[in-house]
Image: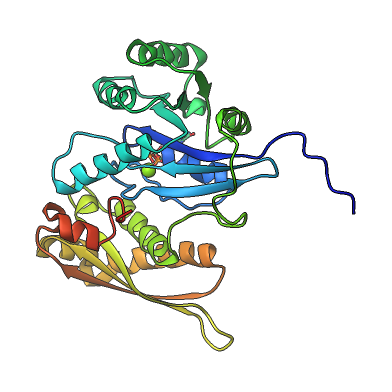
Amino acid sequence: MPKPKNPQPFKSGFVVLIGRPNTGKSTLLNALVGKKVSIVSDRPQTTRTRLRAIVDRPDAQVVIVDTPGIHKPMDALGGELNKTALRAVSDADVVCFVIDGAQPVGRGDEWIARHISASTEPHRILLVTKADLVDQATVERQIASARKFLSFDEVLVVSAVEGFNLEAFLEVVIRALPEGPRYFPPDMESDQSIETTIAEFIREKIIRATFDEVPHAIGVVVEDYLPATERSVAKIAAIIYVERDSQKGILIGKGGETIKKMGIEARLDLERLLAEKVYLDLRVKVKPNWRRDPIQIRRLGYGDGGD
Ligand SMILES: Nc1nc2c(ncn2[C@@H]2O[C@H](COP(=O)(O)OP(=O)(O)O)[C@@H](O)[C@H]2O)c(=O)[nH]1
Ligand SMILES: [Mg+2]
C-alpha cells in the first residue's frame, strides 16, 4: 500500500478546563470524548480529581484535563482541590477559562483569572458554556466582563448539552497545540483507573440524592472489582465513608430505602460504563473528620493522586 501523504504534522498536548464549580467543565469533557468519563451534578465539589480524557484523531491527540472547580476553600479538602486545579494550569499547552453563560461573571471568576495570569503563558481561550440557556446579548456581556480581568487569544461559546460548537472548539485547540507524539494509546478514553471511575460513578449518585453537608462529607472507595465471567455477573464492593453517624443514617434512609435507591441507580450506570451485568455491594462507614486530614484525603484518592 502506498504510504498516505502526511502534509500536516501530528499535534498533541494538554488542554486544561478551569473555572468556578458548576460552570459545566465535566459535562463538556464528556461531550468532547463522546462518553461519560467525568461525573456531573449541580453541586460544587463534584469533581475531586484531576481527570484526563483523551480525544484521539488522525491529525492530533488532545488530552483534556478536567479540574475541580476553584472556590474559597473551607477545609483541607477544598484547599487540596484548588491546588490540584492550579497545578494543572502550569503544565498545560492551552488553558480554557470556563465561565457559565447563565451566571453573572463575578469575584470568583476574577480570583481564578488572577491565578491563570500568574502562570506561564500558554494559549488562552475564554469558553462560555451553556449557550442553550442564554441569548446573544447576555453572552456578549459575559465575555466583556471576563475580558476586563484577563486577555484571551480566543473566545468561544459552546453548549455541551446541544453539542453546539464542540467541533469548532477542538479545531481551535488543535491549531494551538504544538507538534508532538501520541501520549496515550488511541483507544484510551481517560487516565483514571477503572476502580476510581467506578468509585466516582457511585459518588455521583450519592451527591445527587443527598443535600446540604452530606455530598461533601462522602468519600467512596472500591474495595474489589471482579469483571464478569461466562458464569457470573461482575462483582463490585465499595465503601462509602462519611464523617458522622447522622450522615450514615441519612445515606441508609428509612428501612434502607435511600441506599437501595442509590445502589440501583449506580448499578445501572456502571452497567453502561462496563458493558456487563453488575452486582453492587455498598457499605457505609464513619471516618470522623476525614476532610480535614490530608493523609485521609489522599488515601481516598482525591486531589492530585500523587503525581
Ligand atoms: N443547559 C445546560 N446545562 C449544562 C451544560 N453543561 C453543563 N450543564 C449543567 O450544569 C451543571 C454543572 O455541570 P458540571 O459539568 O458538573 O460542572 P463543573 O462543576 O464545572 O464540572 C450540571 O447540572 C449540568 O447538567 C450545558 O451546555 N447546557
Ligand atoms: Mg466537574
